Length: 453
Image (cartoon, rainbow, N blue to C red; front, side, top):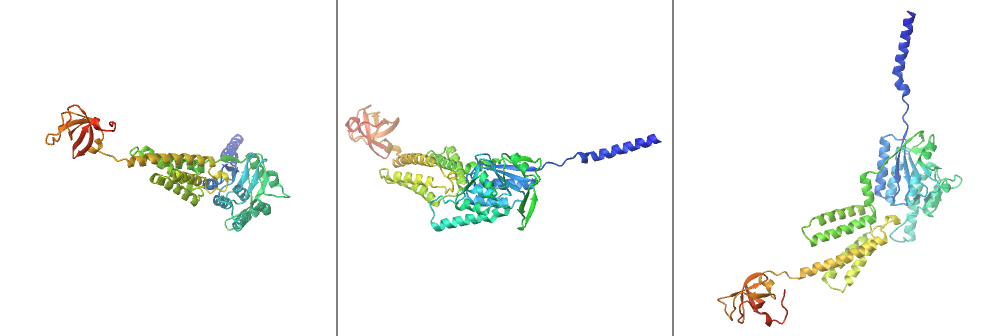
């Protein structure tokens, strides 16, 4: 009996341990930190990519979103969209300037200061966020408006993370730039929260850190980051984002535009080929799509239109190349100033603009001139097309023999012919005119000009 009780007790303990073992062995899953790399100019494609990453991080309940940033700056409208997305994100956002040698220039500095955690790697720099008007030097009033607007934008959010709003404003008003050590100096600038040499070191240093965030109603609250053994998952750009990013390159867009225009022109000159016209249309549409994402100058578009008109006028009114030369000059100026770029990286490279404009202008001028000459030459058929050609009599031609017309062989064809004088059989004759379908001929030796071939 005692032996049976011990067996029952052992069986009960084993059953309990078996039931509880899944729960005892199940360890909490490590937190996930999603990561994206932004190593390009700030433009609409970049803003859309950040928004997608935030949506994925929120959907998967990620512990944070890490943004590895290296940018010279970009468009202010896209920057505002990205800052708004960061500030309203339910997932904490970490902006990290890395690796060594990277920078957060101009628009990138606004993103750095908007993040819940701002970090930099040693050997990086950030700042120089003074607004730039690429279309020229603004007057004092416009310059002051631009500075005040950008400075107010920076002040509107930089203070909520306990960073130095005055130092951040200096980067806007005075184009001041800071190294990682200068930005971290708590007794001076204090524009970032920490420095780290790698993503993993940064995430490990942030474990247990408390940050101040703002909810949807505008109320602030403290959030502790739990990032121990966090798994960093990189979100690569989608195919769509990669294609759009390439198209947003103004130099590539210009190449597509010029190449497409040449192919469409080729289709007009050789109708029925179809393929050049179809490919050219696709290239022009892709170029228009890419340029639509960039700020364009209307004056540059007018210059391009004027260039086309002047080249066509050169064909209509010969000006010894004056109109064509001015048209090509308008083409060069139009392409050089087409994109209103706040930074050089978003503008069209001068060497590309000049080379494409000169090549396209000269080729178009040459082809249009050939086409106009061909259209001015009358297309003759029938008897009119044979005037001036030589032939051979197939039978004797007699003076005034209208009732019995003779026949001649000209251009491989047999025609009825009449002559003002008698011509023997198999004699060379030249066609001088025609009446209806009857050719008028005379002996070939009577013509002062050489026989036509």
